Image (cartoon, rainbow, N blue to C red; front, side, top):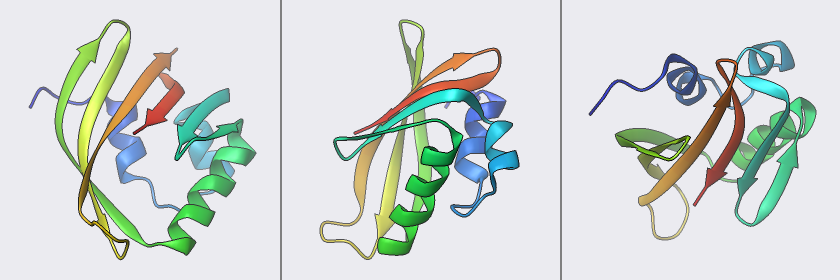
Length: 107
């Protein structure tokens, strides 16, 4: 697998309950995350999404492969946990701005 950009590797390595300061190092202030048909915009909303999602169903994510699609970096990852159908393969589509994540679409 080609080397994942450092900020994306940091995203996958950041604990679900990471504080706002840690997330600001990874995401732009107005970053947009789309997961399970819900949108989360801004550091506070992204932090709440991460904490709530993990609290509801603990899971692990293991990046497997990476490709580019236009300006985006797409990382296919195995997501496993206590949810029905585990594990699943999900694409994480990242768009970066200034070395940070501006957009993430999971699906």
